[in-house]
Length: 90
Image (cartoon, rainbow, N blue to C red; front, side, top):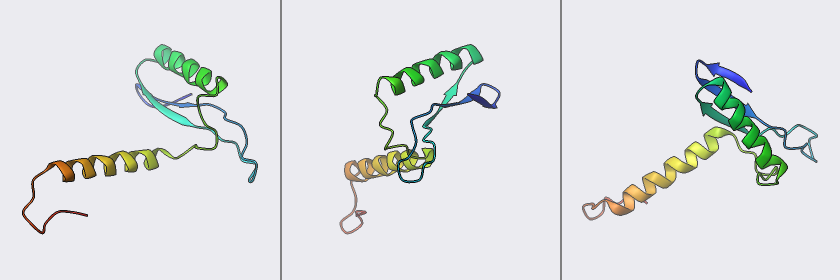
């Protein structure tokens, strides 16, 4: 756990080693709040890892999930917004 800036914490847990590269897999989460609350969140995150709720083979950088969420929102907006004929994004 490390403080990125005041009130913003990076939570990281060990998720095993990559069998191909031998590198450590460490999924991360960003948490906003106090140090005490961040410690609790890290404990919950670690418990999820131990319980097998985190798939160690799917440890993706934060920008990947942000990009996928953004693309899903744009697609949803595009499909729900009326367009003039021939201007629909594909």
